[in-house]
Length: 288
Image (cartoon, rainbow, N blue to C red; front, side, top):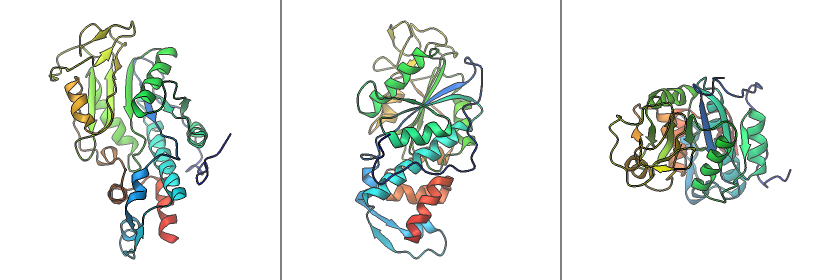
């Protein structure tokens, strides 16, 4: 397996591997996490300064590091993905975690944790990667309860993911905004939910597709356990998802909502509490 220069599979925390929670396909959630190739991931981390005191905590030196080199950027991206996946695998309500990636290092690291790896069969890009994951679910048991989560959430906890999925249960379509309120960190589709009655705004296009292949506006023309969301990730995605029929999910959930794209985002995630692998990577930065 070819390795990406500057990033190698990271040592796991603890040593236990967990492959999912609920054994009942109708009750458990399938979670899709798309992960970019490390050589192109988190490019905005290289465009600003990291302040050591933000990462080191109280008593930090306050030294500003001009940008992040390529090797560290890749290591940070892999650390974020590793902690995100570890939190997801610890959620009892999740029965399978599917990671969609073409990166061999990411695939090796996250499959070792217990995730199932899916290739980018729909081509490059975030939304095509999600569609590839949805295709894989349809091919291996169908779509029942499906969630899509970004892979750059180093401060997320299993409890937060579980709380968000509990809030999503019973909503045909759900969405959770990022910390800025404009992007999307979690998209859900509960095929067992009633097709209407959640008070969602009118749709502007097909918000879900039945397994039979018939497009439908939210809540029409679908059957239970056959809901396929249409991903609309990218800048301003929260409003696009909401207007497509996804109900905003309640809850503060700061770690789940704090995706990391910039040095400022990373400093905020550190204050919330980084996962074990991301914390070790940040400590390496502070010590260097």
